[in-house]
Structures are given as structure tokens and as C-alpha cells.
Image (cartoon, rainbow, N blue to C red; front, side, top):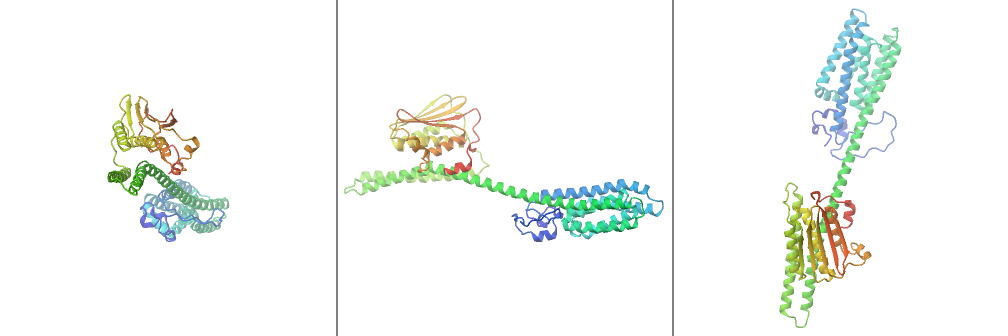
Length: 471
């Protein structure tokens, strides 16, 4: 929110001086604070922060409380002042001045939103308040309880105008006190009372300036913290989305394009033979075309999934895990000619969120793809086991088994992100993934607890920085 007066709500526009509005650039960014060392209480005024609502409401409340304190002190001190004043003209003068001060304070407190902008735009109105305090001191004497109501003038000037305004009006107030002291110097206790009120006026001006600067500096620090937090949240969201896109591309389009490249290489080799077989060329060309169409379809599915993530107002229905597992294993067998069998034990799997089903299917697909490309296996078995507390998926083959442990740990460094993506998906689900060598072959076991509905599929167990390192 900009700090220009016309962009502020009416209840908070009054606190920003015109000079301050001219000094501030018309942007929402926070300017770097001055590095010049300034010491003491009467330091340079803090610039109003870009977000003003909280600070302005607090300053408005303090200013109104100052007016309320002045009104209370006038109402309480008037009877005591009249009792200590001689009859006749002095009593009537005290009564008139006190009544005038009470009326002005009450009107200002009740219609603060109307009086405050004028008071801020015209500091001379504060001089009228100072004049009223001078008359009050002259009529009631410095030792009267009414004299302490004049302390509110330096406090209010510090809140509204900063240290320059507080210094000016506090100095004028001290000049008034000096004049009052000379008029009442023969009255008992006048010297001590004048000195005490003078000290209160100086302290009140300093307190007003200090409160004003503290609030504005607190607002600036709060704004900077909010901006830093928002930037960090955006950066983490971007890194997390990059890691997700890397997994999706690896598990879909990247594999298909790899197969397309192999099919194209085979077609090129067959075409370079002295007497190429037209049937073989036709079959290999058909494979290349099918792989290209599959890559295009997977790209469309990825784009559709991205748009579905953008629309947060729609909730996708639960997906049938068993049906989709059956379709995946059948498609895998048709495409690779490697037999893949699905076995289901236990009750029907419970309805799962689409994201949970998507991650489970991606892990199964990646495990089957590794069996086809790296294990040199003759079969693959997928087992779905459902119990009251867990859902377990097991993918087992009879291939050559896993590589040595160091090679497995360096998979991501060598550009093989399949196992890394499987582990990341399992962590997002809150599931346990175990990859163990068989005799022979490899066994991949994924255990998903069902004691709580697995709806929070976006909660990563690692930090987004760690997650993006694999992407």
C-alpha cells in the first residue's frame, strides 16, 4: 500500500505529513535506512513504512489517549483549582478557561477523524492549544492540578510532528512557564511547581518522539520481514515444483524419447544394409511413429496435469488403484513383450486421492521400466496387498539384480534419476520404500500406512533445497 494520502483510508490518512509524502517515492518498496550514526533520543524522524495501517492505528490510539488524559485532568483538577483560588474574578477566570479546555478536548476526542487532519496540516492550531495552556497556568498558578494538563501539548506534538515539532512546542512551553514563574514567583511553591512542570514537558516531548519513531521503525522491520518471508516461500515453491517437473519428465517423456532414439537408430542401421528388408523397415518405422505419438500423448498428459494443479478450486475424484495397476501392467507387457503379472491379496484398496494414486503408479512404472531396461529379466511380478493398516506394493523380477552400493549411491550424479525419483515420491506419500536384491533379481517394496487418510501428498519430508538438488 502506498503512503500517499489519497491512497490511505480516511481514518489513517491524517498521520502522514505532506512533506513526508513528497519525500517518499511512489513505490511500494522499502528504502534502505540511512547508515549515518545518530545518537540520542532526539534522532531523525523514522520514515513512515510502506505498510501504514497498523502503525497509524497505534499512533491514532496514542493521540486520542493523550487527549483523553488531558480531558480527565481538566475535569478532576477544576474543582481543586477553584477551591484554592480567591473569590471573584480569579475564580470566574479559572472556571471559564477550564470549561473551554474541557469543551475543546471533548470535541477533539469525539470527532478525532475530523480534527486530526487539520491539526496535522496546520501546526498553528497546536499553538492555540499552547496558548490555552498558558492562560490556564496564568489563572490557576503553576501549583494548581490544572497546570499538569499542559504536559499533554508536548506529548501530542511529538506524536504528530516528530522531534522538530516536539522541540519547537516544548521550547515555547518552557518560555510560557518562565513567564508564568515571573507572574507567580511570590506564591508559595511556585518555583518548585514550575520546575516540575517544565521537567514533565521535556520528558513528554521526548516520549512522544520516541514512540513515534519506534512505531515507524517497527513497521519498516515488519514489512521487510514479510517481504523476505514471501520471497523465501516463493523460492521454495519454485524449487519444489522444479523437482516435481523433473520427476514427471523423467518418468514419462524422457523414457519414451529414449525408446524413440533406440528405434530410430535401429531403423537407420537396417536402412544402411546392402539389401534392406522392406518388412523390417516398415516394422521399425511403425515403432518410431508409435513412440513419437506416445511421447506427444505423454506431453499432453503432463500439460493437463500442470493445469489441473493450477486450478485449486476443483477436487478430483478418488482413483481406482487396482484398475489402473492392471492397465499399467498390461500396457507394459504389450510394449516390451516382458510378462508382467498383477496379484491382489486382501480386501479392495480404499479410495485414494489422485495424487497418491499417481505417485504409486509412477513408482510401479519406474520399477517395471528398470526391470526391462537394466535387469535383463524374463518376468516381473507385481503384488498388491491391502490390510487394515497398510497398503503394500511389491515389484519383483528374476534379473541380474542391483549394481554395487557405491554405483547405486552415485546414480543421480551419473544422470540416472529413476531411483532418486522413486524415493522422493515415497517420501512425499509418507511411505517406506525398500529395494533389496533377490536370488536372483531385485525386489522393490513400497509400504503406505493407512491408519490416517493419505490426503497430504504435497508435504515433503525433506527441505525443498534438498529436493531440488536432485532435479
